[in-house]
Length: 131
Image (cartoon, rainbow, N blue to C red; front, side, top):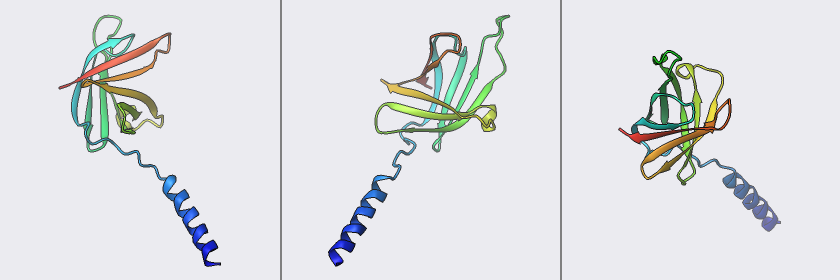
């Protein structure tokens, strides 16, 4: 009977351990990145700041008259699974928006790229370089 109990305990323990979520913010991504280039109708200027497991995205768009819009600030978290892919969960309005924008990024040769669909057509790709 003890063998059955121990088998059950081991089975439950293995299920609990396998259900853990070990994805944590990658602490190796730190500092500031500035917008280097954009493909599509993305922002004209921007930056990403990584501090203490949080990310702050600041962007400005070109207005029809050629001037820049006010600054759009999104605050959120980021994580990766040991690959060069980074998942962002951002909230606009300085982090107060109830909507979470989930976007994927990729780190390649020191450049960080965000890629997301353009509401009109195609894709927007923002490339950031370390500051």
